[in-house]
Image (cartoon, rainbow, N blue to C red):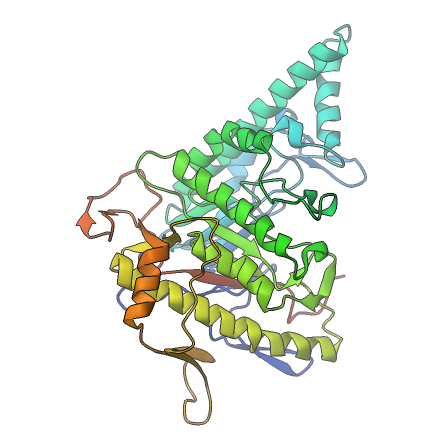
Length: 448
């Protein structure tokens, strides 16, 4: 990932350009997040760019009313017209061909694996079957289904692969990848609360391996670790996240010979279907902390759209951002950076030696203090850490973590130069963990 220039530190992109923003006269301080980004229309040239279906080419899909757009399914679309339109969208949102950053393609209408298109996505299977029946009206259902699955998956693969290749040719310094890939489908916590293990089903791991063509073309992975309200402050939240991050790390290391893809997890400060409940410390540890300890390159923190006419809610968000969330982000990113510097000479990222151990990259409160900006320190970030690692801290890190070296380095402490790897995803490698803040519509009026 990002290879920082001396003194540079990757911390966070927010979907807002920079600085303090306002929500009903309530100002927000985003200074602990170094990278700013907004998914809203009109923001261009950002460190993190999200391409929704209407922003990149001619993506085929069905509306909620069942109306086909751009052919509806990939095998019924014009790939040549789609590719011809890509450059326009890419150049609109990423104007510099030399700019480094994250480029996420957010296409969620259908999944490239046939078996994963269940309700309400089964319209893509039905449409594919209909196309086969038009040509072969006398075929039995089993033969129709087999041919439809083949045509859909083949076209989906070609559509996604050629999109990535074309995008990389236009903006080679960006870490291109698809949002929600890989997925784990370990949502059975609602049915098996007491016996829930969090593990990804074997069939889903196998289906992820079928997507090796996607992993080979991707330059980063962007899985989601959003927590359902049912997981609020429960032991199952950590099981859920751990399995999903471990699956992403498995995929990242399996399909390339000499390097691993960086993994950026999507997380959020609230819960699915419970947007007014902010994550307590325990679930910050289970999401951001767990991801850092397992070796994720960063966490993209998606800020949910809130009703900005509600001043009380605006103030609640501000207090959280500038309180528990801000302090925890600084704690983890500083600890990850110190571990990288101490164990890996700044040339790699720290990973747990035992993926299932409950050990984290946290600062020891005996040796570190978090400082907050005040009248005596009026410039710089809102929070920063002061202190030094003790010999006991270093022993803890060496006992529980090991190095995953960045491109061009190898050895237990990333001490040996391995030479350039021509097929690796660019000169990118962040120092420690990056937390990329996407505040979505926190500070914007709700869209009609």
